[in-house]
Image (cartoon, rainbow over all chains, first blue to last red):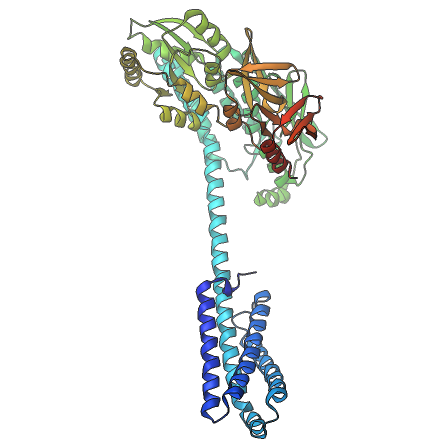
Length: 357
Length: 245
């Protein structure tokens, strides 16, 4: 509901002054027509106070339901009805208070059309003004909302871009290359190639794309190879690809954050040698991928929170399949395992579902 | 002069070693792959300068420095850490952004040598104060327990108690001492979970089972373990607002 215009001090003052002028003018007019001062004041007071109340009533009801600018007829009808009601009330009140003067009674009846017209004009003007005010308020609110939404989208995009580029990984890899150039130039050249292939893969792939398992594993291997250069003997990987899973499909870049997670907790946060295991298998019609890594229970506890920050993977799986049971994690001793199950959708279903992400 | 290099990547250490060859007066006495080794080496060799990576396994470079009473001069080497870089810049400590070249490395060495001749107060303390507010570090506290290093996740803390120049950190396994002030912990810890209930106490609200009146204006918080933590009048107000009473 938009704010009442009366919240604005200047509006309140202008509105009060206008009403005061109206009342004084009304009194002077009657006095000029040779009515006694007291009668003039009473007439003006009653007529204009009731009109004021009617106006406030209309303003308040509009606040709850702002009519569309195009609904002229409704607004017009409403003004006419309220004017008639006001006029009847006004006549009744004035007859009670000033009815004993015969001259006045006759004047009251004769002046009703003029009073009605004036009342209608004032009520109509106030109504139009208030409608315009409320519309401008709503417009402002909408614009604010739109600006906020745009800002949010931009921030999210920026964050995603930054995540994709993984600055920490990138700069550390460049640093390794820098060291290799002096020590073993051949290896430096190889690593430049691997890093380039990896980055190209990141940039090329859309998250909406579906890829073959084999393709995705090759891409992950690049990433693991680079980490192997950085950490030397400390890292070894074992990949077991189940029979007839190589041609199964999965959403692009889905495994990437899972493996990154395994590296983060298995390699960055431990000091000994680390084995990262990756195994794929076919269960019923689904592709099942298991990634396991050791972790240090002293510095990280996988039980609490989102389980090693796999929230984004969970979210993507939900958007793709509308299921929350596709990602599971388990802890055995100091081994943390992530299990992801990917239903094999075919043909049109795949296309339709992937468009949604 | 004695130099130590601490970095978890072999190649990152070797590039520093390579650049050091141009400075024969600097002798590399140790290279370490993590903060624990680094701590040991620093205590053993008392180096003049340390090249220190920030993101390392188990404890970060900052956390390692916190455990040393008189930290040596340090040149930080880091790949990408917005927070750390802000902290360095705020305290004018030299740092090398990976990858860096010989020229930039020489410059850092020259700057350090120049500062050595002038007696200057150590900026490390202020730097660490800033660094401990980083989001990755405010979730745990690293303490030294004799010769052992203990990492305490903040949600394992029952309450903190002032003890002269130290703060006692009470946990399941007893208490640990940390050479910091109560104000420091009040700053660093999440205010929705840790409330300064008393001048000398900070309590983990998730551990409180009830709060009883105690003497005139005071209260006492009873924790799940049965421990009693004093609550002053001001502290009671803070507790009530956090607990939404």
